[in-house]
Length: 133
Image: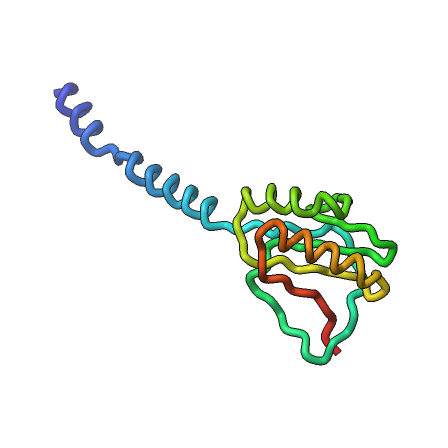
């Protein structure tokens, strides 16, 4: 009699394996589909523009300070190394758009050098950040 009661208790147990499988599959799905934004790491005084648009799909930002310093991924980089750093970032997360956050007092020549490095890395879509009036 005791043997039958133990067998009934074993049969009544809920198998948790399918639920755990679903949870792990959902976790993997969310990890794979998450996009990570590569911030420049500093704040700059952007120029103002009346027709500034918001780019929703930008994942990589490059900041240029008024002193000419170039920042990518929260660290300062040499202007000649922008393409190499960008290629490394693109290997981690491919994108077709880079946003340049140039200070309004930054030299135009430095911004053009950075744009040239971005083109060298193979990205044709470059956006310049500006503040709305």
